[in-house]
Length: 185
Length: 185
DNA sequence: ATCCATATTGACTATTCAGTCGATTTGAGC
DNA sequence: GCTCAAATCGACTGAATAGTCAATATGGAT
Image (tube, rainbow over all chains, first blue to last red; front, side, top):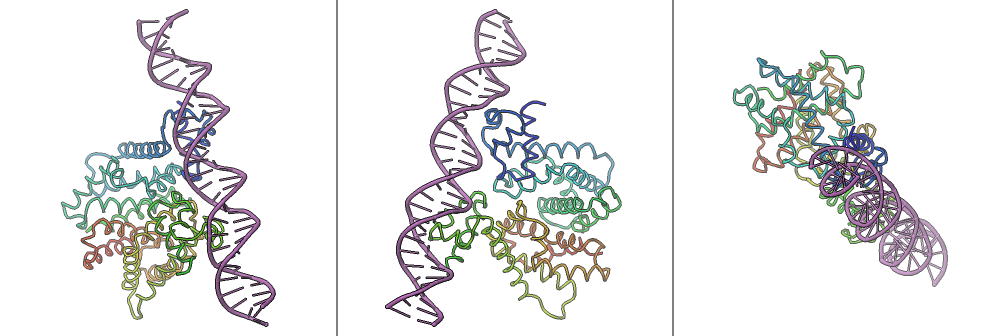
């Protein structure tokens, strides 16, 4: 693994554990087993390190979701696939999930960053379809995406606290019905 | 206003603007027009200041919600009343809202803090009723409260960005239907 | 008037931390 | 085996910043 990757991996872990305000850059470098200087060589400021990490995580979620979608699916099936992909991915990457939540509720985060996510864009397209076809309640599409996203987050937190339910696909599909009922007409 | 109140009021504003990690205690004291020392007299650590502020905000939301509920309401009406009270209160106190979001996604926050909120307890009682009466989907009541809470938050963010809708009660009741549809059987 | 706990001040400190920099190493291309 | 840019090191710095403390003020109770 390159030192750059090593740094990101270490930062992800430490940021999840102590928050990025609670994690000195020097500690990231130390735990990654590299020098302080090389951190700033790859990430000129701490903010750039934090943002890069976030972008990276979101890209990986998107890539995973892409492997799950399939042609010929109904709208509901597509939304379910994305919803489930996101839930599963976050369950399997608790460090990324913790970090993501902190980042999205920090002053770093804004609508430009949000819209630039390919995962958000993919959802937006589906939601717009659903609204056009009057399958969904008539609201601003980005708002509906946010509703779904917040329900994914609440769901993941819930499953993380109830590990016994984590492999129960029937339960997860009941959880999805909550989200679906919220947005459907 | 007492110096203690002055400090809390100032902290609320600054924390909302720059986050509590981005706000030095010295600045809070300075902007409040009091000495540095008196801040630590009332709040021995910054963490205590932050937590006190959070508790205070939650108490005020609860008190406001209490003024809105009324006897003889149906379950749906009661849930709506609480939902709307929370939305309205957050809309009218954007600084508190910003701060609250940051706090709830910071390492300070945990389930003990959450459960201790009287506002959460009040919601819990209603939700438990609804589940017992099979009006709601059968899930862990605290989870259902969290679903409602996260939908309140998403709703408030949405209305804050669309000021033209902020006084549209018919629109707000449509927004509530999303939350209701999510949890109802 | 005196007492005393509490309120209040603001200068001070000890530490922490993001970011710098000059020196050294590496390795790919010629 | 020379050259040069990129990688890597780690000691260092300058600016913050949470929290301390000794001194003084205030005001209510006796």
